[in-house]
Image (cartoon, rainbow, N blue to C red; front, side, top):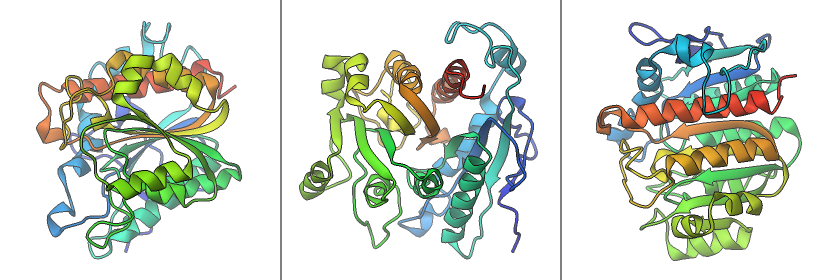
Amino acid sequence: MSDDLTTPPTGPTRTFLDLPFAAVSKSMRADIAVLGIPYGMPYHPAEMANDQSKAPDALRRAAQYTEATRNRYDWDFGGTLFDGREIVAVDCGNVTAVPSDHREHYRRAEAAARLIFQSGATLIALGGDHGVPIPVLRALDYFGEKVTLVHVDAHMDWRDESHGEREGFRSPLRRASEMPWIGHITQIGIRGYGSLATEEIDEARAYGADIITAYEMHDMGMEAVLDRIPDGGPYYLTIDADGMDPSIMPAVIAQSPGGLTWLQIRKLIHGLVAKGRVLGMDLVEIAPSHDQGQITLVHAERLICNFIGACVRARYYD
């Protein structure tokens, strides 16, 4: 069994935005670190390597005009991506897996995330299904303080277990609620029929989760949503692609109309970064074979670049 936590992109797959590859280690130094976490905990044998597990590399391959993206003026954040500063941004590749032990992937993902946090870097995790934030959330205990969790999704993901599995894509918010270092939880964009029963909604409300449905969000506007998120941070942002409207992210398994628009998710990202330190974010549940004209992957790249550009301009790395 290899002891390497991550493996670099190979073949036609480049690093994200052609950033330098950096193996995760105790000696790594970075301001921003991209990390692929391909595999969630399966509910059925057919899900051991699902379509979402291909998303980290699909996103890397789909990135076009990388030199321009990194070095030309970008109207999304009013300048170049790194704003002319000496920002160390790296791609750590994908967390390695062991076919005979699915939980080993989570153990390695947690170890990799913790080392990235210890390096002082902001983590950008690419899933994978929505189970993969669970090990990242565990690694947030490194900071020794309460972390506000901001969750964008069509579904609440508060199931205690499904088919006997407690760490799959239906349960990340339930598992987060059990972690002493996770404080306030805001859930944005919830709509349609969800992956939970009525009693689990009651349990989420009993925890104190602020559940903002998509319809409430559209009525009140994103500025009002941001006002409901506690000030100061620190924050962690987890984004399920089906939280977006399928008109901008169709490459999901469970499409549901009425999700966040591009302008809304961009305002959320910039607004949250401005409120306080965002320790990291993940983007999960992209199913590449369901995409149409790379609409999803184009928006995903823009989303990540806006997060990077906002963090740089918030002077996280000065």
